[in-house]
Length: 86
Image (cartoon, rainbow, N blue to C red):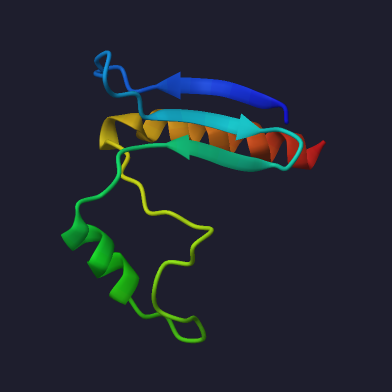
């Protein structure tokens, strides 16, 4: 896997580290964030979208990313888009 580090939460301490990477081979964003509280996870699991089952599949996870990291997520999206265009 060829992960490209984009950034880490600038307000992170030694015990927290929401992080953004790009997997250049798979053209995917890789995000590390906080686990949601049970109420948030339950709300996400109950959310309905036509044509999709409710719940969170075992191979997926809900994470929380602070809004201050939006510029890093944009940068990661730009990296993927540039690689796709080439």
